[in-house]
Amino acid sequence: MHDRDKYTQLVLEGSEYELLRARRALLSRWTIPQKIRRCSYLLFAASSMLPLMLFLPPVVQQQYVGPNPALSRVSFTALTLFSVCCLVGASLGLAATATYRDGLEEISEDQAWSLVGIEGMFSSIGFVSGLLGVTATLVLSAVGYAGAETVDSLVTSGVDPYHSQAGIAVTVATASAIAFCCAITVFLLSVFVESLE
View 1: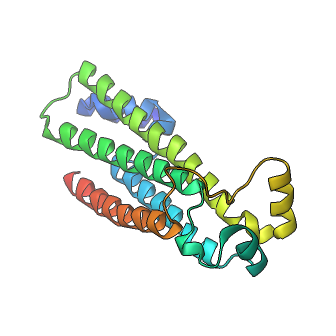
View 2: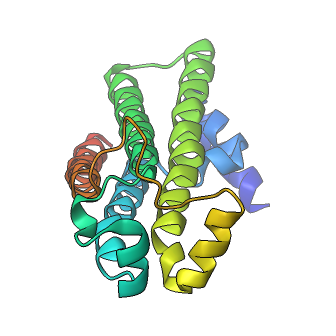
View 3: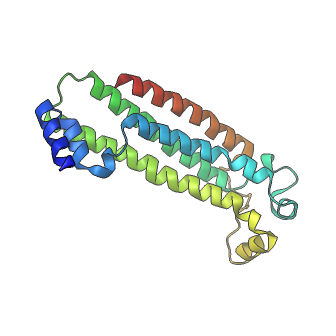
């Protein structure tokens, strides 16, 4: 009954865009500023790769990472940068969608469908690709806490979490710093977009 009341109110207000969002419950659970803010939280999480690497057990550091984990070029930093690109791109796309929608006095049904589709696309980029990338980065960063034996067994099975031969890998400190700076920027972007509503 509550949902019917909500839909009725949106129809009476003539808000095609919000009506379409409301009908797609998963899409409309969070507003655009909330989605952008959650992207910033994921970026902050990605930046925690540095402290995870710094406090690895000494045996794992010596055997697989090196004496200075912050300056090591482990291959999953490339995955971190990919995640950062997905989350920043999604945030910018969502912000552009909100800004464009705010500039329209009236939204036709076709425009509403287009805006909802674009919002859904950028949401998927952020919360699927970005989330998976950040999760994989943090899991690979933390696998050493299970002990050197666990890392040995992974390497034996062909998975070297601290492989350092990737051509596009950057240092752990650089990847974490990029993620942290982007997190602050995206958080401020969410504040700006929220001011439009």
